[in-house]
Amino acid sequence: MGYNVAIDGPAGAGKSTIAKLVAKEKGYIYVDTGAMYRGLAVHFLRKGINADDRSAVADACADAEVTIGYENGAQQVYLNGGNITDLIRGEEVGNMASRTSAIPEVREKLLELQRSLARSHDVVMDGRDIGTNILPDADVKVYLTASVQTRAKRRFDELQEKGVACDLKEIERDIRERDERDMNRDIAPLKQAEDAVLIDSSDMTIPEVTAEICRLCR
Ligand code: C5P
Image 1 (cartoon, helix red, strand yellow):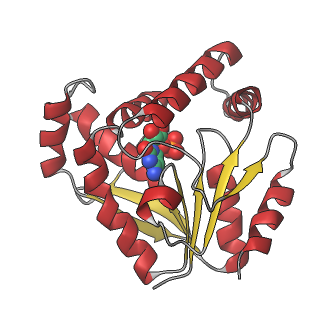
Image 2 (cartoon, helix red, strand yellow):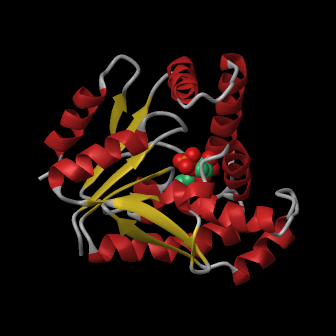
Image 3 (cartoon, protein in one colour):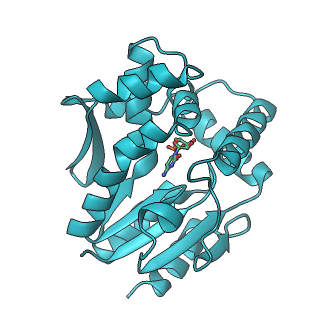
């Protein structure tokens, strides 16, 4: 059994940035489970499937194999053997991932992959249901959040920096919608595990949040 750190929280709370830094500091591997949902989303988009068509999504799971690997320490996502890491960050893929992640077959498909990584490695795993559902016995559980406004502003700055045209209000609306879907779905909704430590990063710097989580680790 590996040493397991679970970090859950809503979109844009800084989970991946922080989880990567904690993993580096502690010598654990970073597992981005959202990237796995995004990997399946690429498959659904390629097949032209409508996210509302639950049975089509469930059927399409049968011929998708998502795996992950590491190149220079960075997580890579493979779909049926092809590296799709560069394709998963767009809004279209994110929306497809957010909508299809509520479908049981989709979650079932990724559950064992996530658990087996945690069994065989020391991991910092981030997602929505890691502490509540995937790794209920994780050694450290953190629920990392921030206000909607803070999260939207961070996302806005990130896109601006990349030179992508965007609108702050639109991003804020998108984040609210994603929160709503993640928190209210029937299966594995986003919520703080009872034994998770709550960290609100709205007024904290990245090094401060990283240090706080590292302090919780062995
Ligand atoms: O974190 P990220 O935005 O990459 O995740 C993409 C989508 O995958 C989220 O909007 C969420 O709906 C879903 N997801 C999930 N469970 C996880 C990780 C992500 O449902 N453990």
